[in-house]
Image (cartoon, rainbow, N blue to C red; front, side, top):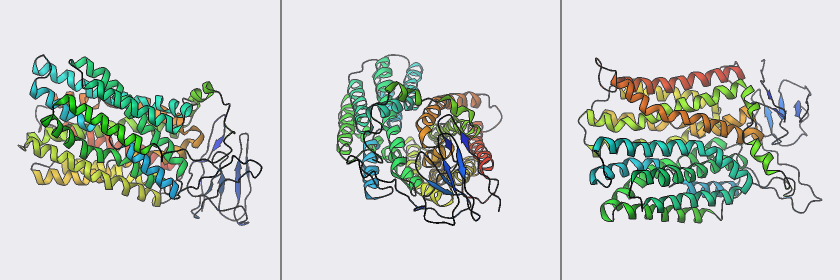
Length: 496
């Protein structure tokens, strides 16, 4: 069988496309090896398999399909400061648990709808109802934009301060932002405190998980990423209930203060167990220029890689479709004569099913390949919109849509790490995240553009154009991912 191995070369290294499992040692004489260095790649052929040794992570890839296993880096016996942390081991799962706990309540976007509704109903701020809705909606939009763009800032903080200090700083940003929000007596105060400060803390906190998890997992990387990704759906179920209850009993000021305390306590509880994986002499990277680290965070050479350009293009399209779905499910529920509580329940069910969905998607990706899983899930997500949401005209059918949609729509987050590392390599992963964050800012325009398109609808059922745009967005993501797959390996059933 012919195998096609597309490799993207930058000025720093030659990267293999797919980093899967690692072979044990080089005592297997039947395996041919391709040793990747900074300057050249040497190929040795023996038999029918091709194995790639990446200079960055010492990983081996059997492209034909032979299963590979972990090969730990060699320990330098002469260096007493060298420590090796095992991949996919007990320590890795403990670190993952800590990252999950630290981030579970940082997804404040799930609470803003409840907070905004409270401000509008209780007339906390002055101004006409229509004007107030626009201004408060802008706070949520600013939060989303800053949350996405702050991945770039989080990359810099991660490289300069390290995992633990960067996590602590993000928790402090969130805590201070929420405390300041409790004293806001004008909407523009919320732009600064909630829209900027809280978004910076949330974005950096989530980025830290995306940076740390790949170094701890190889065989179960997608599963681990799916578990971490489920932290925000968990928060999406718990936080609105907490916010609503505290608003009712104590008022909006104490609601912010309780949230601040909750996030600070979970961050402090997770701090002792989260850490970076040690793989080499601790002095090997000391003395590296911070200016060099910052420059590496945005390496424009990556834009020469067509697969990478296609992949980051998927980001804003996916978020565009996702934001439309989450934003307009309550509005559609109102249109079909459901109560506000029933509309909110549909969103809660969507978040609840996303928890097992994220984990299952990650497990499937580990079995059949990250790109394969992403293509399948995005296709199914589009079909749930076209075949379920469009025809959902009562509570049962809308709830059925939310369950099916919730199981598959978050596959993007479960597979993003493995796919980006496979395309650009571990050395360029931080820079790839930065480019992805910057281009994803465009997705914030999604709900506004969808609203404009729906205003042009005069003949069809309300929200029809909105549903078509959302479903088409998911389908475009699947098609673009399919292009990447066939650029990598033209075999339809290859694990990619």
